[in-house]
Image (cartoon, rainbow, N blue to C red):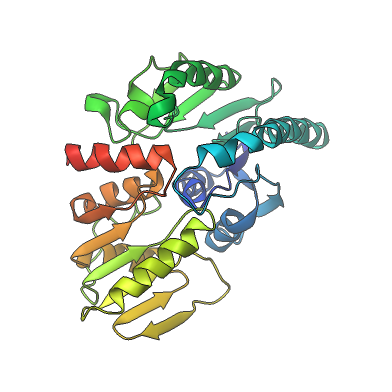
Length: 316
């Protein structure tokens, strides 16, 4: 039966949008009417991937990372805005559903996009949210608070393997799985490109991602490092643009973005992959079977990435 479905990724980097791509693609293939609600780069990315679909601009909670090595003290003053953002998006959805009917709302890590009058689905790989080591005692409390949001939804999809700690480790396996949750395996935009022919043009591929200013800081650091080396390097800036923009600096090609086919081919053909430890990136590399080539540089102060970088290094 054809359904009308609203898909809403969080705007904290591109990862939430990229992992929604295979979901949207599957829903469209099944004949459903899909509407995308997002903002910023995620909205631009999904508009580029699905130009035929209707989109609605709906702002996520604002967040700006610190230039230093801790996010906690940046985040604490932001908590009132965060809570207000959850309330605003919950009211926004209620008003939208009063105007038009949706059979299902799929929210990727957006806490307030549930409604009792429609089937609501929540996507997260962080059932438990990692805290800094000196605040680890808060984790059980934060887990319970997160569970309260999860419990509002009819379903919770966990993009990971259920067995052996999966790829998310403690983030989704340390505490009891919510009754409405299920593990759904990997979500990757490259799931259709597993058998693509490798492109060996570059020795190193650097993938930039995340929220400013850390994305730009990482770009400058990697550019300074690889421009001095005599090896072909591609730095993907992760900035969707109407046209692909390329800047050549010595042996380095600095590019705004790459289409999925070439992206996957270069990942399979290069010798090393330099990237953040964002979970969507981890899933992309796992699906293409190149996770063993990755060197992870977690976003400073982002405890989830700091944990994943250590966990995956030990696991692999």
